[in-house]
Image (cartoon, rainbow, N blue to C red; front, top):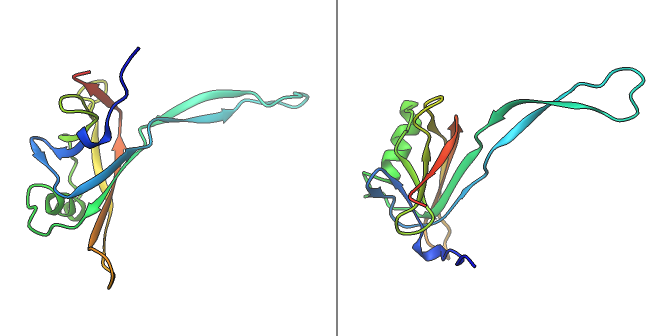
Length: 140
């Protein structure tokens, strides 16, 4: 039987640089367009598979304005419309999801970021990345 993965061993990184103070990441995974192929007289709808959508990655945690190779690099990538190919979603100490490098080459775009503060809490940060193409799991 396979062992379950422990979340505390996960991380989110840009290349070799761990994005500091993040405590959660999620990847929505691939969805497909369904094209209605029904015609008059059909009792049931019929579908064909259209294009695939690589999904989104969301990360969240505590804000660190000094994380120039992580959080601040992601915010800068958003402002500059940078295509990121070195995004790494680690599921353990050595295995991670990364934009696929072939057929076609893929990348991520930072589509949103948010910093939030409250009187009774810590300052938090969250970012959303859109996957253009596909992700692949390395090291597993």
